[in-house]
Image 1 (cartoon, one colour):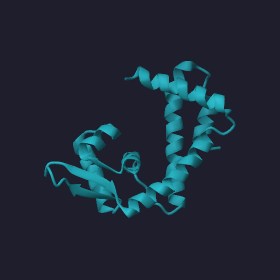
Image 2 (cartoon, helix red, strand yellow):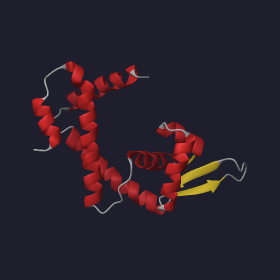
Image 3 (tube, helix red, strand yellow):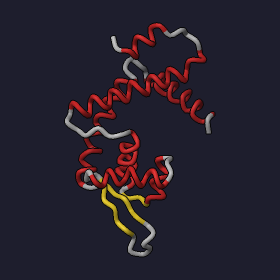
Image 4 (cartoon, rainbow, N blue to C red):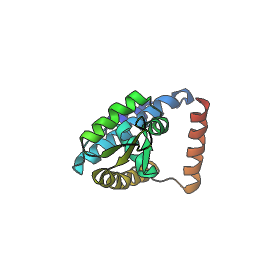
Length: 153
């Protein structure tokens, strides 16, 4: 039995532990992703790197400012993250022909291949997450957690 399940077994049923439980779920999901990426020979990246690649896969190309807003990080942090992704061949950087101050970021071929593979891993993770849930229960869990998230905005 792994640590996550041992904690759940001994955790008192107390609604004030919801944030601890969410944190443990996040940790377990991160471990799952890390192990699955490793098992498939894919490079281990931080969740911030993965979020950037995901956003680019959805948008095509984004300016650094747009990317920073979408991943909820400041521009200097995104610059460092994008630099690493560029060095590893996952993204391309292009300066705007109209304005030298604007830089566009897009996925390279390697970045598109990576996001295609991680999309299938993501589907497996979601299936694991909702194993044994009805569609109605899935929606209910989502709605309740969304309300908690909105309380922090």
